Length: 173
Image (tube, rainbow, N blue to C red; front, side):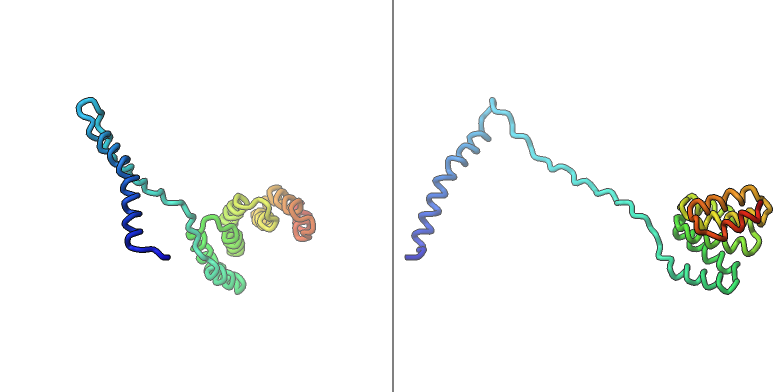
């Protein structure tokens, strides 16, 4: 038993006999004289360069948020505004940064800037009652009571439990 060197020779001979006719056909087909068409030359297709997949570059702004929040809590609204502005520069879709910067603008008496930030926050998430309430406060600060009432009403619509919205809407009438 077992596989011997002579068996290997027999196997090679059988393979050669099987492949020989195929090789002969290929040679004959390639040397067909004037009547045969030349074999087409193979040119590899260019490898396409993959397009870069667009990935939104959203920076990790948690540390800046924490810092800005501490400034707000301690009444340092000018410093909070600077920090929230940094966040917005890094991530213009950060609704919370607009809300909080708007809050600090309002606390420093910059009501129009506050309203602009609240407008942006509403554009990013129109379902947040706090933003409408805050914008209502800013309108009331400017004595634009009809606009304040609209925002308080929207805050109530989004959050019927919001006592502050009811109170301020009542004061605005």
